[in-house]
Length: 88
Image (cartoon, rainbow, N blue to C red; front, top):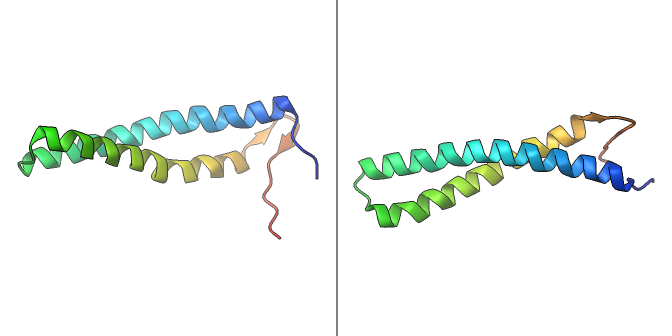
């Protein structure tokens, strides 16, 4: 089994970083906004709502987005190589 070169590893890290950042930011903003909006409608005080909305936004960005980002990593045909999962 061949190990990736430094440049190949950088390409994989770049894919994980930019897709995770952009998609996670969007998912986090949507989840955080929805939490804040509905929490305000429910009458939750703002000082209690902000940390909850931030935590839900962070968790949504991480757990809802990163599985798709990893799947994209395995689907991506890089120049000269592909990443494969070998079960065993």
